Each structure stands twice: as structure tokens, then as C-alpha cells.
Image (tube, rainbow, N blue to C red; front, side):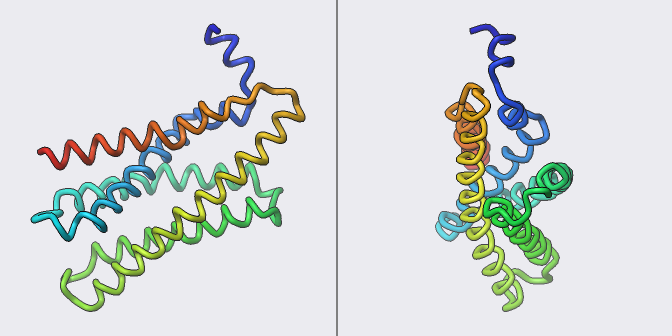
Length: 185
């Protein structure tokens, strides 16, 4: 199937998943998640995690602009759906993501990484980070289900596997390669 025929068979929702802003946010979020997992689960067994910690923090800072722009555009587009379960879970995810960002900045600004303050903020960052991933996963599953029903009602061609690859597997592979490159270097 040529590109023109493929694009004409895709729904508006499927095209939005391919937007550069969405792609940027997805890749940065995936890197932040996977590097956070490595720091949490593998970090205690590594001699030095400062390089990955720096990369995690700086890409987290780079994430703020695209994430803020995406969330504003997304909210303005979906605010009419308030009260629906996928909207409420998405809004809760946003609140938790804000808490993850705030705790990340608090950790970065801490005077000592050995203080009780740092340990508590780090714990909050980790626990809230896991909650974000659980809530975001729930939100996306519901969004995919709602979207699939809408597309079927419109008679649009469903390409969920392609969207799923774009949202999960490609960003996971790219983030894993970056972390592996850091580890090898």
C-alpha cells in the first residue's frame, strides 16, 4: 500500500499519534522511565551511576517543555470529556507526573545525597513514578478501547498494532539503546 493510500485510511486519532510533539514526549517519557528503572534496580550494584543520573536529570529537564506543550494542547482538545473514566485517570496521571517532576527537582537541589531529606524525597519520587506508570498505562488502555470503538463506528481502518509499536516498542528500544551506550561508555 502506498503512503497516500495509507494516510487516507488512517483516522484523525491515528495521525495524532504520529505528531512530532507526541513522538518527542513518548520517547522522552520512555527514556525517563527506563533510566529510572535502571537507577533504582541496578544502581545499587553499580560502582558509579552519576553519569546516568545526570542524563536522567537533563533529559527530564528537556522533557518539561514538550510535555507542558503536549498537555496543554491535549487538555484543550479533550476537556469536554471530563467526568469520563479515561479523562479522570489521565488527569490524575498529570497530577502525579507533576509530583514526580517536583520531587526530581527537590532531589537535584538537595545539599547532600546522604541526608534523610534526600532519602525521603527520593522515596517519594520512586513511589510516585511507579504510580505514574500504572496510571498512564491504565489511561492508554482505556483510550485505545474508546478510540477503537469510535473508529469502528466511523468505518475507519484500525491500525492499533502500528500505534502500539509507535507508543511502546520503538521508544523502549531507543531508550534501551541509549542506556546501553551509556553503560558501555
